[in-house]
Each structure stands twice: as C-alpha cells, then as structure tokens.
Image (tube, rainbow, N blue to C red; front, top):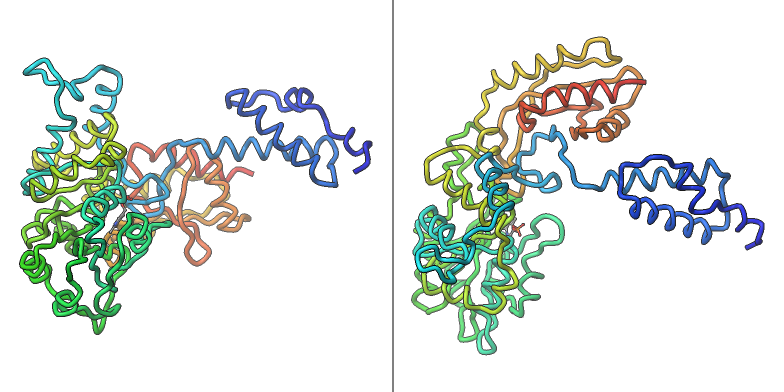
Length: 451
Ligand SMILES: *Cc1c(COP(=O)(O)O)cnc(C)c1O
C-alpha cells in the first residue's frame, strides 16, 4: 500500500467532529470510528472524505439499531421469538419495578429473621397451577431440560429413550439430540419417524436407561400414517420398569386454548402430569406469558433432588424474573386472563376492525393506498403451528416504493414497525399491535411514506 493512500484516511478526531451529535455513549461512537478506519486501512481502496463519513454514519446507524427498544409487532405472530416472545402484563411489570428498585425478602424469612429458600411462594404457586406435588424454576426451558438430563444420566445409566418422531429442532440452534448429547446422555431412539409403539419403548428400556423422554413436537405436526402410544401407557411402562418419565412440553398453556375460536387444544402441564408423567418442563415466556424462565413440575422427591444438584445454582433465576413470574402465576390462580398474549387472543374482530379503520382514516394526504383487510394471526413461539386466529390487517401500498423498500423504511422509524409482505402488499396485523401503539403506528407509517 502506498503511504499517500494511508494519508488519505482522516484522523479519528476529524471524523468525530464531522459526525456531530450522535445519541450513543461517546466510547461507543469512538469504537465504531476506530473499527471502520481500521477496516479502511486494511482495504486497498480508500474513498474520499464524504465516502468515509458515509461509511462511518452507516456503521453508527447499525450499532444504534441493534440497541434493544420497543417495536410495533404487525406480524400477527403473538409469541414472536425474534421480537421478545411474550410481552409482560401490568402485574408483572409492577412487580419488576417494585422488587427491582427495593431490597426484598428474596432469601430471607420474615417469620424467623434468618435465611430462607429462594422462590418459595412462586414454587408453591407453580405447583398449584400445574396441580403437582412440587415445582421449581430455572432460567429457561432448555436449562430445565439440561438440568433434568444431567441429574438422571449417571455413569451406570446414560441412555435416554426417546421416539424418533420427537427428535426435533426448536427454533434457532436448539436440537433435542444435541441438547441430549451435550448433557452427557446417549440417545436411544425408538420407533420410526412416523410410527412408535409401546413395544418399541419396552424393548428400548434396559439397565442402561436413565429416563424416558417425551418431547412435545411444538413447531410442526405430522399427518397421515402417524402413531405413538398414549402417554398413560408409556407412563405405566416406565413405572413398572422403574425409570423416570419426563415430558418437555415446550409452551405450557395454563388455559384452555380451544376456547379461542381457531385454536386447537394445547396440553396443559396439569393434564400431562395427570397422565402419569413424573416431571414436566415448559417455558415461562411462551403461551404462559411470563418472563423468560423454565418451569419444572411433578413429583416432590424428584423436584427436591433437582434443586440439590450443584448445577442448579448456575441456572437459578434472578429476583426480577422471579417477581415477574410470581405476578403472572398469581394472575392465573386468580382466574384472570390478564397476560397481553391472552388479551390479544380475546380481542374481537369488531374491535380490531374499528381500530384498523381509525388508523387508515388517519393516513390521508400520504402517497399511500391503505385498506382494511382480513388476515390470520398465529400463536408462534413453536406453539400450535396449525392454528390460525381470524384477524384484521392494514394493507398498505406506496405510490412509488416497492413493498420491501417501504417495509425497510418502517423499520427505521423512531418506533420501528414490523409487518409482513403478501403478494407485493405490506400488511400489518392489528391483533398483535397494542391499542396504545395506534398513534405511534400512524406516525411511523406517515414518517415512512414521506419523500
Ligand atoms: C421452546 C421449546 C424449548 C426451549 O425453551 P426455551 O425456554 O426457549 O429455552 C424446548 N423444548 C420445546 C419442546 C420447546 O417448544
């Protein structure tokens, strides 16, 4: 590289000056400038001063956009893994704020004035909700599963018996076979992808068997020549052969999902335990609508043994999570349908249409055609993949911009809006948009349509 080319690179100070005010901490901006200038030095071709500045501006914009902030979810997917899964209800938010900003009796007994167990109330509440002897909670459902696997897999018994049809991948990078193997377990697959019988399970259980695992298929369904034995039968077999039987339920609905038109029945933890499963585990932030957590419920001695595992300490939840989950579970036990996900599911088509019409009515004078349309919302988060709930959409076409480009502009707004594109039209599903975001939505659509 010629030295003259090196001299063409502006100094850090000069770039910082030309950048002007950026609403990021100065060390973050400095870091972007240094990295971009270093990258330029490594490349052979150096752009002119404006080009350098443009590149740094785009670097800063990228970093700013990666900062976590609220977005408007117009995707119609209620538990959207990329958009933070379940939003928390007001009770959970109030608990977060009160417990987070104060000292609390997290591990302190107000009765004895000494140390006490963590999460005692929550564990009881979860046990009541799941109609179980006992329950506990860890950081997420993946952690719950790893804890269970590590506990039951010993030097003498390492095999986990699982149906081939349940060796699934859930979302990004969570493959049941990989999770099993990383926990020191050996897979003992039974049956075929579509057919597993009780005899298959019976043959697979040996002295090396650590446990029998059932995994809720969550994000896909199989149709046609498909068969697996009832949970009750597998439970009876596991009991007779004295091996623990665990079900990873994934979502863990605490309500009757079939009471919402368009939704199928999602098994509840209580139901699964009634069928004879020893332990069930599920996520706190899918259909349950709480914070990220993994709940384990079932037989008392097993839950107690899991809590004694040294590894349990590495998975324990923070006080914020515990308080938010406690408030969420209390809501269910009081019979409320107060999580935002349930409230969104309960919204009537008439109410959604009225909002959509108001929003469309507020878009006059823009280079847009906006119409109220009919669509379908989905649970998402790998729950009930076949179920669709009727919904209302706002369908927007820009006079000159392509749908993709208009969608990109919507994502750049102060409150970014995420929709979906169908047949060249940008659609925003009103069911997953909070009513209190309607004004922000109008502002974002207007902002994105401006020339
Ligand atoms: C979602 C899911 C998991 C992972 O749960 P996290 O709480 O995201 O760790 C595990 N198993 C099943 C069946 C799931 O659906």
